[in-house]
Image 1 (cartoon, rainbow, N blue to C red):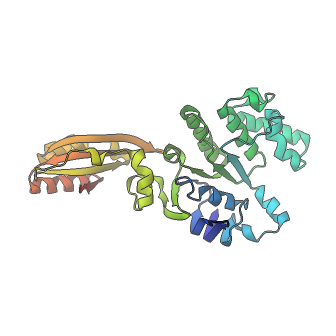
Image 2 (image 1 turned 45 degrees about the horizontal axis):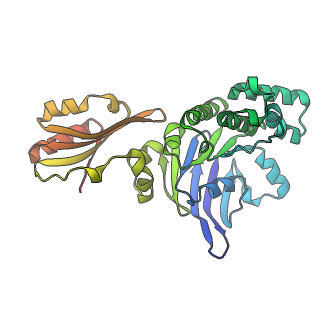
Image 3 (image 1 turned 180 degrees about the horizontal axis):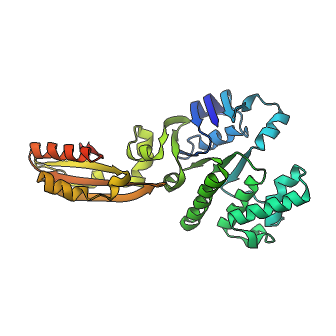
Length: 335
């Protein structure tokens, strides 16, 4: 659906800002793809290059088989109709009602009134705003305004939806409801969704795959479950350290040579199995659980434990083999 080939973007000035440095990236049709990174990482520039709100200095950007940065202004306007976009601060027309905001793109393209009426009513039902069509944005909550923004972005029946920090201005409960809506839109309308965020719970909640950006560079791309539990880059580990919140540096040092500190990661059905109790009975080792977390990545359960294992070298080796046989990832923590 979307392909970046060696894309560069620099903003000139007294001190040049290298926003994108040789980006190579592919996003499949129908997936929810997240881009995460700290402020200034280049996330917004990357997503705005997809529909040419920012033009790259070099490289190629392909969307649905079209080389976007080769299009003339007229063809670009037509291509953009296949892409909807929602923003952090909603960008609604405050002098227009909810109905008029949703209808606005259709009015610009001179659609017949009957078609506009039907489309707006369908979208209002999809986003849960059928009772708000005659309200103005100032009469809505933040979550309701973002739902108007989503409906407006879908008005032209796009194939692609871009979300630029779409939940950053919302409280946690409202964020959850908006993410649930985006997930429904992806499943029902078969839209490809690309979202950028610095909120780890957003990536965790709905994304199939994600990319980690820092200083204009893509440091890691892959399934969300892999990035969160098997991160290979320091950029990912910096992003995820506070989110996963395992306090390794605060744990007491192990002076006893018969003790070993392990990080155990459980993914999928294993996260709900009594593996630790089975480990104790089978391997005759003592296990002290220092930290634990059970959560979900989209629909996949995962768990993480920090444990102290006490036993002979042979018992510890047997325990490690037992865990790995039961699909548990084992990492010895060297402090």
